[in-house]
Image: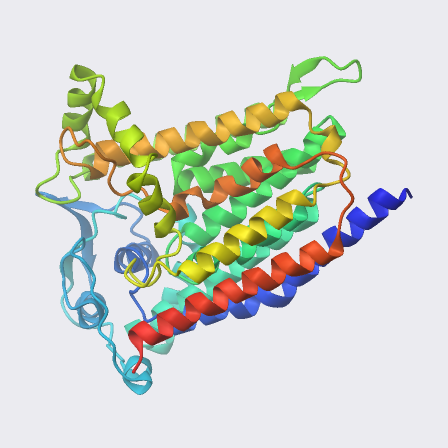
Length: 459
């Protein structure tokens, strides 16, 4: 084996070993040290998971609210922690003792009359994003666990799923594993994995989709087994957040033995399966769509405004990605708790440096990533960013706003790997020292973020 490829193979093995060594502990610490309901929209995810656990696949509409009838203890537990029953109020940090946080035990209230609970942000979400959470609710109900410990159990199961998906991505990824190491150990990745929401699934499954796509790209074809995996992953990710559907097309164009481009049938099938599934789900849930807050326009009203004022969305987009707007977006990637701890700047700079090191060392196989594919990967990623921005402009921004609201850095984590692979240098020698440095920086970033979380919530 050439020395260059042998060194690169060692770098790849090291990246995977470091991920397996550090990720489980870090994910578990984020899951347990962050108080229940102190990750974005966590109470809404709990409500939806509980609804699904009773085999109610579809939410209910009541005036300007969407949700369902649930035991009263769920909302009581959330209100104790967040000090508010409103879904989109600013969530303030209320520090208390370690004993107070870990001894809170709110009964579910299964024997009490169900009350209509508003969770408009998650009422229309597909069951595909809630398998670990539903299992945790089933176990919690069987063991009569308090609400707070059901949340913690769901977080641990969610973290295990995210870890398993990212491990599968490592095994499949033929190029740039150190970049995936940084993605997997990013503090916000750990925080998302250790939450009750769907982000852990989305990040892990998106990474596996990218890895399978790179394997097909370098092999020149999709295997039947990888094609089936792609279809399942694309459907799961798309049903959780449909905006990531284009990731299934990262290896849409392959070259045959003669060097000519051809469409990959596996990618087309995966896109079609996921597209049909999400379209059917959206059509079944159109009646649940309501404005996020009373002062926001409906998506239809905002769309009508955009069509009548063509410069409105481009202006808001330009403001989000220039100057203070871009700085705020990056900062949200290093905000923790209910986006009220941080931004943790030491974690930010350590993560940025680790990503630079992971990309800068290059990859022996990256020479086989043709310029055309690099441009395609960048276009797919940019397209997803634009779609995220448009959706948030329609659903979470005031009428005719000149700034995008609701766009958060965690939404961009699934795009770090394809963008990193799009710019990874060609024909560089793998350097184990750079991998070790990147891993050390990421562990440092996570520890610093955890320290800030503990200082904010615990006395």
